[in-house]
Length: 323
Image (cartoon, rainbow, N blue to C red; front, side, top):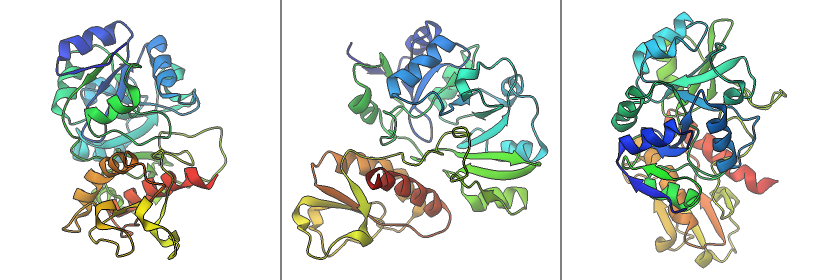
């Protein structure tokens, strides 16, 4: 099978209605989509990605009214966040109703839900009579795709269609917020910053400790390693001063590294803009991964705003090469 790329929403609807899986654009990253109420279709997502069944998926809805049919309640702080950030890169972890098959969220009591803001995908959702289950459209543990070409590079011949919506606006996954004793907890740092969540709710928000032992992750983005290129990647502080720099690459924030040839480097934002840098992060990893370097080195970002989200992705990518 040769994977087709195009902009035909009706063709995507036809495939989804037949329990097929397709790649769709969102404002965060491209998602691997299936009918979120069809167990056969959902199983195909896990198989195509080689994703463990213990790792829950996110359900995407067209609007809040549609979403409320599939969750038991919407806590007040969740409603405040939804009013502020939806449609957009916010995912809420809520108690699910019996309408959602257990395979979607690995048998957990809560389900991750969101309303994306990408115009093409919202149009698609409004034409469907079911929500879409859609993790990132990549092989499990690999770099998330922010362009249709990134999806093709990893899933060509595995899925029938990629709905091409251009380059993703945010370029980093949604922020996942759950609630414990009605207090907000960030389960995955993402495109909406910790500071924005705290400002919206006017409370201090804690970040979930992923090291706590549990029966599998509660939501996406909570496994030990993820977002990794095939090329070994390391923190730039680990580079040996005697290392042969001709065969290594470097991904930096806004400044070149004097130890590495300029042509081997990728700067994420000349203006030191974290929003621009986060949009380019996965693209830079895809780009550098195709250069056949022996290693890729990468910087760390300021411990604030989107810098926290990017550091989270880098830490998990590097962790793959620590095992």
